[in-house]
Length: 219
Image (cartoon, rainbow, N blue to C red; front, side, top):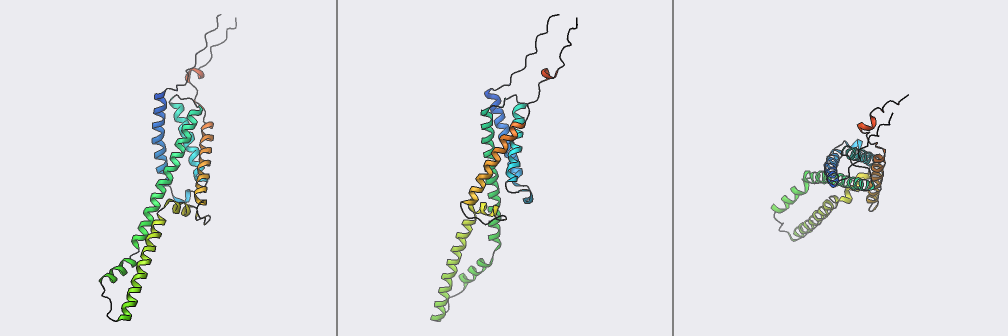
């Protein structure tokens, strides 16, 4: 009896249209995941662990999506996954900094002591006594200096370096450039976790490969 021809396996597609579709869907997925990650409770945002888990989720999700679209796991796809991971972590940093900035500005707005004092000084008349007038002018100079110092402090707190210092403050009080270096290490670990998780995803078998083989001819 003649052997039946082997069933040909469908080759994974690597067309530009499939790659572009995967990248667009992946970009939307990473954006949504980053927004969700920013709004997680603070007790879940453990340093290092938070980034590694994020990378594993990104790597597994993007690779699964690629396989569902019929793409093969090649070096170009891994590089694209790395780029999307870096984008996601940068977006998390940006959104977290924006939340930190809003909270900082809100604290400054709630401090109405300086505003009341400034309003009182603006409405009050300088004393007629020369000695008292001199003390009054000296007090105004000190107040203006303190107000400028407060503005400088507010501007400094709004910078991203201040947020990075605030982020690791529960563990250690570090000055620039150590908070930035710590975030860069987290980014590297996140990328490594994404690649590792991507390589762990198994391509689903095609229906043709899972079909039962024809029975052997015993004659």
